[in-house]
Length: 219
Image (cartoon, rainbow, N blue to C red; front, side, top):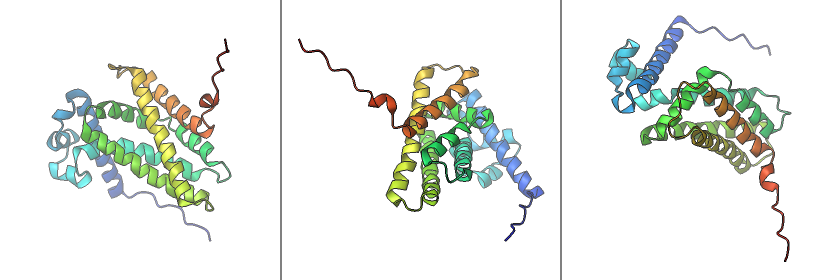
């Protein structure tokens, strides 16, 4: 059966997408200039050129609007993984999916949000929810790509990949130090490289941990 080509989005759908994007951009801009404590639905709505009511038609909270870049990035990575050749082993496919995160427009907001979230528990909880949603989506993809595997195995692998991502963000944040320069163009490249290295460690069986220390010589 020949599938019909996907229909282009309607003008109404395009307008809704543009409004959603404007809200997110306004929230991110105010986060950088005024700080998290100053963010309100009213201030973001005003900056986006919409009403407070319209804001809540798109997002249930400020945190949800701020979390949109996380959702989009993880959704993009899951989409790439889902489209890869099923013959590619799962961990190599996961590395490929991570390496696909090259668009600064996607990755840079995530980097900034992660650094802000360390000081704001509500933002941190929203990010955790995004990671958990991604783990569930990964579990479904892994199950489909490896139908003979057990549900537990699929879940363990998905959680391992997500854990590698979390570890990469934490290592990246530590390397930046306490006062990272938001204008430093190397930040995004460093995050992408750290993410790829973390998943590669998982794929390759942690080779550096397999090296045994030499036995001390007996006196």
